[in-house]
Length: 262
View 1 (cartoon, rainbow, N blue to C red):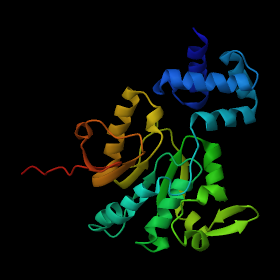
View 2 (view 1 turned 120 degrees about the vertical axis):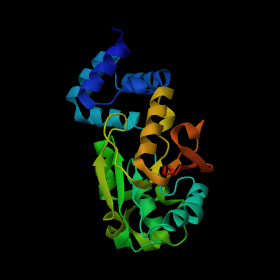
View 3 (view 1 turned 90 degrees about the vertical axis):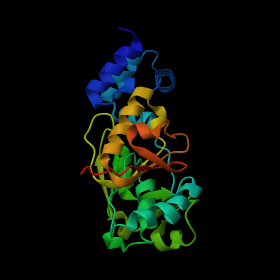
View 4 (view 1 turned 60 degrees about the vertical axis):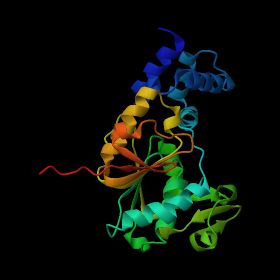
């Protein structure tokens, strides 16, 4: 068994993360570079290191799950969410079920709560936020961020929803309390159901085509009829109709409503 194949098997046994579902050349290159920076020439030795050293293990998880985020990342897409998607969803119901399915360190689900507060009372808002990286989730729960991650906040949001702590900013408890965080492996675990809005951005790009097709199907199944999937800037779905999606706007797909048979 070659070095990377063995490493993939060991990682799957330890974490449940199937590295075979990621684009192999890209992921292998990233892991080998990280291992080399930590002084490991062989991936088998690197695994032994991260199996014993919690810091190495946390660094590895953070590295492969690409935890790069900021509030209201790609602001023009959030404008579409504000002006068109949310009003459409709330046009037929009083509240909506929202899932941020690769939430990283929390900027995305907290952005969702702040945006939804323009339409609903804060106490009416509930966002499920999941990620495979427990370290990222714990950081998200603290709600403390560097100023640079706030650069895309809409006007007035910083004063309304954040307090300054030294050189950092802490999101208000009124926003933090509206998000429920939990660990979830998109390739392995069951999904929530009857979601009206699913935000899945900047994660599918790293998966193989086969894994992506299965995820699109599972994400579609997790949506309510007429629910909306919001994807990342490089993740437009080819042949969305195959998964019962109707293109709505760039980066937004609506689940087709099934016609009842008489």
